[in-house]
Length: 233
Image 1 (cartoon, rainbow, N blue to C red):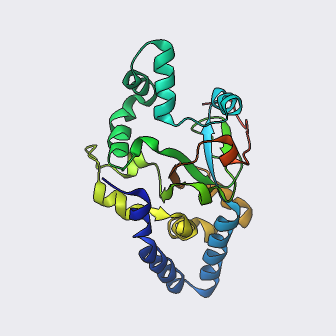
Image 2 (tube, rainbow, N blue to C red; image 1 turned 90 degrees about the horizontal axis):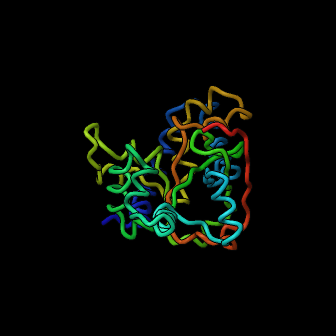
């Protein structure tokens, strides 16, 4: 099984090397912009979770954010059905991939998914309300890593098979999140105004998935924002 923190940490030196090479291969002006973009990601971007309104109410009332498995178990008990049936109804076509991905990790059913975003309601395509975690929440996380996209897409072959080696190679530790973002989104960074950089981090095509464990209580999450930019799904 994959150890999330260990696998991500093992990629740190390679990510840093890729970042340095990227800067060296660009012009002085573009290189400076890429560095500025990476610093902006480090300073401005936060892990956010887009949810439906009832999740916000549950978090406030119970003081705890339930991950997918915990929430499914709670619903199953209330509705008198199985956890699997609840998960299938939620995940639909992505059920097999999500379960395969999570089971590949040590304590995978404890994973919480978010995104590294720059405000503006996070990834609105997923759900209309956005919980933004505090800047230093990583200090209390049991494990935290990032992927350059949606795990149910980028971690599977065209035939739907989980790619363990490829997944491990893509994981980045929290300390190198800004370098990962720069290596993927540098073209957008150098061709757009700084005011438009949030768009690079807040859309499906160019966002970064955050995977973490050990942070679920309201007092641990500390700061969050609830945004309702759109009621559209």
